[in-house]
Length: 360
Image (cartoon, rainbow, N blue to C red; front, side):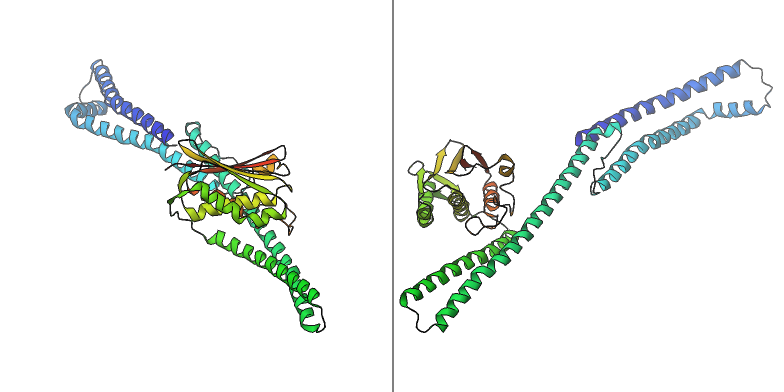
């Protein structure tokens, strides 16, 4: 748009300059023609035209200055009207940006670039509005699911604790079973409550990096070790493929959260008795990482939305896997805050999450 404005400015400036040069030339030409025509006529000295012509000839300098100034003012008004007309059209078009609907902004041919950019802004705003509305709807649906799911484990905990309180002659084996179930349901209840806090933290967080250098390989090994209980439940194994002491400069706490989300996602959506591989290499300009697991192939249309807030691969909420649909959205925000990018690929029952972080 700046280029369009510059073109219009210089175009009007050239036209105005040419007009300023032409005005005195035209005036002098008219004056000479009138003088020549007056010389071809016999005057008696009392004609009105002769009196006017005589006065002009006697004050030619003043008349010329006045006429030139009037011409300059007239030209300025004429040439300024067009930019102000363009400005008015652009302001009217700017108001249309916020109008809902598919109305296309139309401007004069000279403002074709501005018309294109305003239409791009309008479409981008409409896309953002739709995305925000969809995210809000997904969030509301998620809260409804969570509120419903809270009742089930809570009811179970209350029921089993009531049995333990009221049954005096209960066997030790049955008591341990009831306690085990109550503990399991209470832990699940804690997970659901944490999801509520996760939603709140995501909306209120203002991420600021606190960078330091850390051994990436050891960080990945430590995180994979912490996931051993979850891996064991599905008979999964985890393999770290990275140089022994690969260093990276990052916000350690936030990057740990990224890796935690990727590991958790890989475990939740892996087939049983498979291997999860997390690799990292130094390309010289960036640190590139990949988390690979084997599970159901993710369709292309879902891969494009997998990093959206509150988006879950399983639209029907299950208690076995998945969370609030914020893990990958938060991971994307953290990676991009480091100046990197994250993306997903999936084919032939393989799911691959790729991360690249520029070296600093």
